[in-house]
Image (cartoon, rainbow, N blue to C red; front, side, top):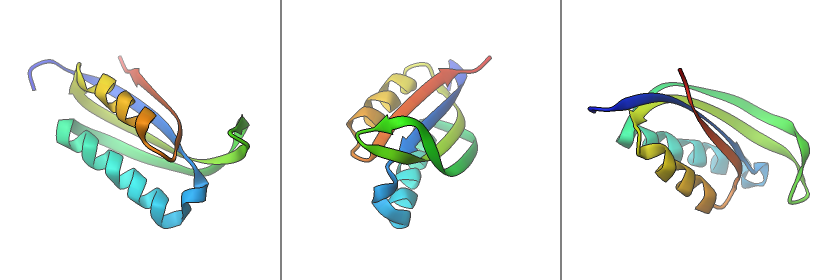
Length: 96
């Protein structure tokens, strides 16, 4: 990878998917990131109360991923987050 940067992604999964659905969702994004870069660490915060309801849901399953990849991939990752059923919110930030 010629031009790589470090990034941090936080995403919230709808807990209505159940334990198996949540595990499958985490694995899906883990695999997607590994195919396009390298993962430095995954921190599953678990089920937490949201600051405000999102679509009448008060809890979400939080996942934090630190990774390195080329500069084009975060836009694609954000697109996939937005079209994936079960992802309530996501945020990708570049790290120094």
